[in-house]
Image (tube, rainbow, N blue to C red; front, side, top):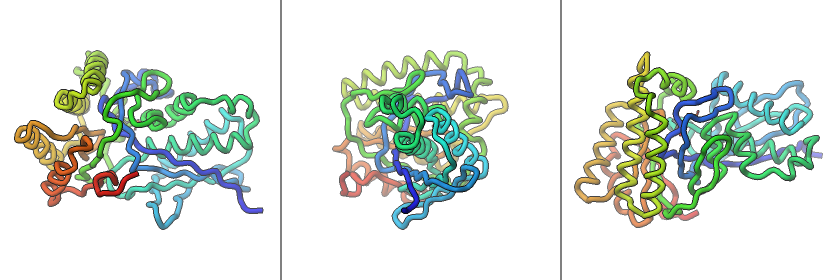
Amino acid sequence: MGVKIWRAEAPSNIALIKYMGKTDATQNQPSNASLSFTLDHLVSVVEVEESLSCRDFWAPLLSEEMSPIQLSAKSQERFISHFQFLKSAFKIPGHYKLRSANTFPSDCGLASSASSFAALTKAAHHLALERGEVKSEIDGFQVEDLSALSRKGSGSSCRSFFRPWALWRGEAAEEVHLPYTRLHHQVLVLEKEKKLVSSSEAHSRVTSSALFQGRVARAENRLKDLMSSLSEQNWAKSFELAWSEFWDMHALFETSVPSFGYMTPKSMKALDVVRKIWIAESDGPLATMDAGANVHLLYRMDQTALAKKIENTVRDFADVISSPSLSGESR
Ligand code: PMV
């Protein structure tokens, strides 16, 4: 009999209202609600394989079609520790080898923690349905339960269980119905180096900023306004709200004590391209940035030509990763 493997995949997501700051760091309880769009073309795959070893361990998943994930010792420890938390939640006996890969290049500066923790949670759930000692309980598990479990490993991963839009408030995320069910996504990859300040560290440091006072109210108000502007299909207003939201988060970084930051001259150059397009055409993509230098753009389905134009404009200083819907393939 061959070795038993449980496999799952999960997409990444990009937040337009950001999760930044926690009320309880051990549980990844967010200070404010966040809203994200799921990125079906940036996917992580996780395999859990039974092992005779006396410990759980991690290795890259080698496959011709995918990029193996490269994890530092610290990140491996975090991934294994989430798996061990899931094993104890699902009462799964034994030891396992975890393997993971991404459908996108691993050296491109795109974090894969949301997609890989969501995929790990799903794979462990598959395993629990066969091997767990509380199967009847697990049979009744809803996707919200998995989202809540995944949140404890990586906060933003709890949004990767829903598509196309996910709203995360409190314990778990949920699907929200908004127009724009399909959007093209493009990420302008501007820096590939590892970040000096991890997002976990950022969550804790932002609370030292004087601007953190009022941050929760600002994010919650913006969320309400963005949900309305998206519902009313007011694209220009949605752009303004998403723009002020990521600047708000980056202002928290820059005003923390000690201060830190992720924007580079190339980020500014890319943002300037986006702003000039909006000024010239009274239209453009939604733009946002995470805790990194790269710029994420979301386009309506009728904006393919605009996406190509921006891609050509930034070509000399950015690598561009686009959803297949932009390169003519559809999913
Ligand atoms: O899930 P974490 O702890 O890596 O947090 C990521 C937070 C941001 O990406 C900066 C914003 C967000 O809401 O995704």
